[in-house]
Every structure is written in structure tokens, then in C-alpha cells.
Image (tube, rainbow, N blue to C red):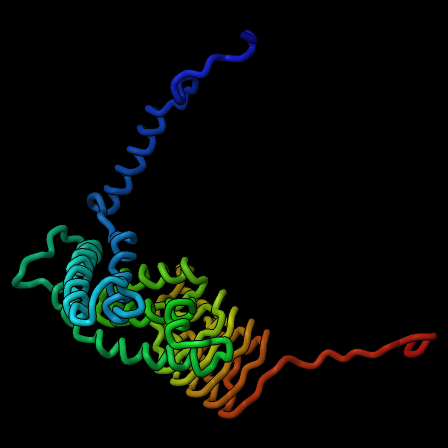
Length: 313
């Protein structure tokens, strides 16, 4: 055997990571964090919310997003069972958010369970969400010549995935569970590259074509029959600070996009401006002012001239 080649041993046997010191340092940091927060913090689970959203999606569209092995007679049973499992898990996650924000560890008193009221209200709105999503899917099918079927739109288009998550998250946002709502839209953001804040108000027949890089801010208001293309930003123009230099939270700071507007790829619209009904905003436009209904906004044309033999000099 070559004396310079060591015989392999157990994994890590020849390494000295000084684990004890690292564990000790992490414990001190963790303890200091707990002292600032008045105790350990148990956060809602992203993994659980991924499963919850898969359940709600399957319950809303059982023939397309549900299992393939149930009979027509078993659809209602599947929907009911899936909703029960998903709503029960959602209740656990809402309780965790409320415990986090209130500082109270136990919020499951049945006589005063605000979380249960929130989830019950959420469940009652699921048929309305399904009806809204039907208009979004139809808008995508009608607006994209590459779409061969409604089914293709639902199961393939990232914009539809993002909208499903946002419409469900928006209900939780309005009901007072903004952390869960944000987690749900960020799950879709990670999967699709489309970032829609759960606070955004979005009308029916909303279509995001292609979608990668779309950003829609918290206080955005979008009317009906609006179409966005990839890399569109509906954002804030500025971020005011208080006397201590901290950002002032809240306030209407994102655009209002009225009905029947199209915003093409790469356009950036910033601030509380209004894009009038029926307007068309061209690709890569940078817009920080309101435009009246029926406007067509495009980049300034690039002037190109051919200079040769000394002409123009």
C-alpha cells in the first residue's frame, strides 16, 4: 500500500469540526432571541401549507387536479374528505399565526377560538373562488392562441397556479391571517417566478401570460379583464420614512389598473397612479404617472440614420 494514501475509515473520523463550541454559540444566540421574544417561537409550517394548497386545488378542480382513480359517484366524497383534511390543517396553522402575533401559546379554547371563525369564513368563500378562477382560466384560453384546451391552461400555465394561490391567500389576508397569506403566495412565487402579494385586489378574468418575473404589490387594485405579460412590475414609487428613519408601513402606494387594460412584457408602473380603462402599456415602458382611459403608451422611437462619406458631420 502506498504509505501516502490513508485507509478510509468511518465518515468524519479524521475531521475535527469543534461541534461542541458551535452548538454552544448557537444556543447562546437562540437563548438571547427567546429572551427578546419572551420565549421560544413556533411558526406556521411552509411544508404543511404546501399540502393544504394542494388539497384546496384538488377540491376546487377534482377532475383535473385530483386523483385519477375515483368514479363519478365518488367525487363529492373526495371533495368533502379533502376539504375536511385541508381545513383542519389550515386551522392549526392559523392558530400558530395568532399565537405568534398575540404572544399567547394556547389559542384553542372552543368558546373563544377566533382561528376557527376565520377558517369557517374561509370555507364559505371557496365556491366564490372557484367561480372567479373559472373566469381567469377562460380569459387565458381566450387570450392565448397557443392554448389548445381549458385543461391545458389549468394544469400547465404558471399564471393560473399563481392566481389560485393568490385568490385563496387574499381571503386569509382579509380575514386577518396575513402571515399565512404571504406564505401561500410565496409558495407560488417559488414555483412560478410570479410574485403577487396577497393584499392585491384583483377582478375577474385576470390573465398573466408567460408570467416569469411579474411583481404585483400589496395595495395594487386590478379591474376585470386585465392581461399582464412577463416581467411586468406594478410597484411602489417611493418608500417614506418616519422621524427615526424607519419605513412607514401601509398606505396606498401601488397602481390602480382599470378594466380591459393590457400591460406588455417588461413594463414597470410605479406609485399610486391610475391606468385608465382600455389602455395598452407597451413593452419596457417606465411609467410613474396616470394615463386616461383608452391610452396607448409606448417607448419613444429610436431615431436611426445612416451616415457615410462624411455626411452629417
